Image (cartoon, rainbow over all chains, first blue to last red; front, side, top):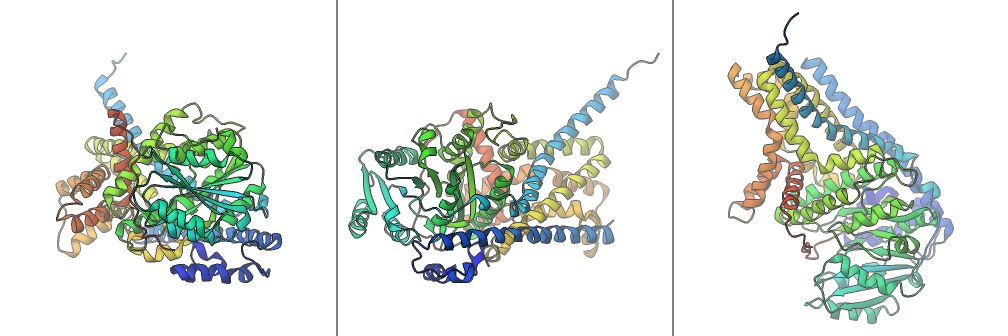
Length: 83
Length: 499
């Protein structure tokens, strides 16, 4: 999923049409709050979106660990084979 | 009593001086490491806990000069924002366009009555800030507007992006919110892919870090949401005295104790320059603007304040590391080369420490950054692996695995470097970075010649996109030193943007 797709819509946003399809299809999936009018989805929906996005930020930690892991592998290769 | 060996003192002093020069090259590495190590803390230190459902009346001001190709579609897209129509007004400030911009905008105003407005300036060409001020002045004449969104004519907002920005304004301490400007050219080439990666590293990555560190360097020009209260506090207008009006708005907001928030999940797609020449002009404008900002706010650097975070050590380090990066690279190369001639073994050890640190930081940054927008990173994998330049990667490889580069690989071809050969190859490696900036400069010079389509991409891949940006920053020093005219060159847009 891309930056756009933290709510499960990343693959759809590759085309203009897909952008709006993504917008139409995303609400129920990522907030669980039904919404009749996307222009004014109501406080419950917006709050659920905030909570969802807030939880999404915790994924930064495993992503950083992946970065550390790759650096670690390089250091191990250096220490084992080239020092 | 023994006499002082002044010759020896001189040699030691020179070595210390060269070591200090080499040390300047470590500052940008430390700064980048600090910023990217701060990003995971955004998991807890973000503004979402203070965000709340809030849909203020938003006036969108769009400066437009000869935007006939793109403005109609931009308006249609803005009208599809997931935002209540009765709280949305779009003001197109037509800066004396000579194409069909007025006709297109007037047609849209008729199609969306009460939502789209055409504001015409008969005298144009004064630059974006003047154009914006024309619209802002009119918008402020009544009390309708509660928040102002400043954007560019050609960018595409994802439908949920404005709502994701306004939720932060529920916190009265927030004065402005910015979004992730994502490279969105329809016909991508090597350069727009490099720019896309740069934007990932500088926005969803670095600006998250700035959220954590407590100060934002710049509101993105295409996505600046300001509260009415903050707009009035900063003078009710955009600064027109420099080429960095976005940065000045950002600084003035924070200096008054208001927070600037970067919202990484509000995504705005923008068309970026497809040629080195166009990119050079755009970035030269930004870099010269930053020279102005650095000088104008000289009293805040490294002076912590309770009102704002701009004076913190971490923010100053990040700001000056970027601004002085070319100087640091040149000084570090001079220091290494000098040490190489005086004390070859010491130079080799320091080079190893410096470039191994740089390589680890670089790998961590790219591995982490790529995960922040995997879709864009996947489509730019060649640029991801060559971001610092093929030659600089060779330098890193030499530092990380010296035996591999200097012994094993030549050995595979039955070659062996002589001591002299190794000495001069090492010297060449030490001074590569300053020369890579020259390579980037040549890439621009040859771009419009018959050889340009092949040689320019080759040189950018070889020398690195970072070296290109360093060369532009260096050019900004020269232009400022010469007092060259600071003019607002509009980046040419063709409507190639896609989502």
